[in-house]
Length: 395
Length: 130
Image 1: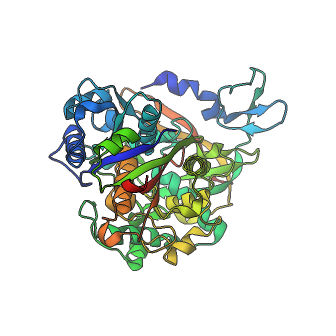
Image 2 (image 1 turned 60 degrees about the vertical axis):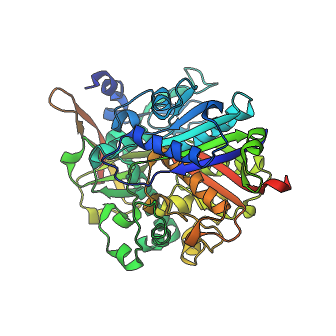
Image 3 (image 1 turned 90 degrees about the horizontal axis):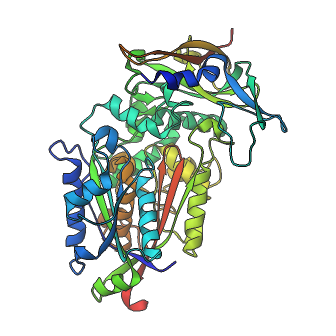
């Protein structure tokens, strides 16, 4: 694959943006990303990939490719809406990378946008449940949260954990979000608060469930030629060294082992293989972590921890910015806010901050290799991006 | 309304009818379309016993649209005696009665009410085995 670089990135705060529409949010993210890349003119954009999971249900708008292209000033550009539930963002990045690798575009823009707060919780839950199997699961009133909850209870049973063993995940997420001005929940939580939190879908409580909120994030991907042309001489370049998508059956019952997120493993291993990197070379992670169990299962599926061990390592600090597998350094789904189909784009915006060394109080020291993985449904689609920081003069 | 959509599911929803692989004997539920390489005779219909044990469960307090009238309700993954793992609601039991591994059996109950002009959707749920 020709080398592909991410030359611009920006996101709106994740919030209940009652005064702003899907297009307003998309416009802000895109304009901010281009403002940070002044040497790039918009006429060089060869394709736009819109990552959105819930727009037809919750934003009452279809054909989001053309709609948002026109709204943000890219009218006429080939534009596509990518929908893979919570993995939409990662799949859109993969599609944009393929367009550049194929020579179909020199510059491709990925625009993750989600607008959910025009609806009440029940409508949002039903929209999210579209990621499950409609006849085997959703008709029975199963939500995505309920599916993760059942995996968490099975995990606790199989490996002998109490529910509070998962508290380190949201505690880490909130501790990091408290330092991120763009996060939805900028306050820390404690293990004691976790124990006392009310149930949402037992054993998942309110402090172990993300809130879905509004936001948009934008990435500008470019060929190596364009990246070197528009980069200032001293810029650090971030290369998209590997990206891969894998899928699994939506219905949990049709998987051989529901606690094994096979697509998460496959997409990570293929993406790392394409980047010629090993598991141990990744220094900072962004995962789908709406609940602690989701992050735990992904870390185990990829091979960072043995089955049944991730909560123990999380309790020992492994997921903090100074740990072996730092996650959620901007707050993760739980505290930065869950932006549904845009989450995979937010993940990469955060990892760029890490690789550029501008992540402030949540900075992972000397981060050069980063991995973002987003999941659609309960690991039904998994998209993994591997990013590598390069100094322009070294190349 | 989607009357035809629910009607298509009648064998699975009312009789717990799955499929048995004629060559290997493997049983799956719910029925799936033929995959690449399979022929119309690869799988045959099989009515499942409805008996199994609870693999996991959750009690929901934030129902999705269309299920608000249930209030708080339990859902589970049930490992059927014939092998398949099935998602369904749990009924006729209190939250404190539920435990992984407990024996359960299928009953037919109303799954959803699709509104004034809609259909009452019936199908399987599971309860503690009597």
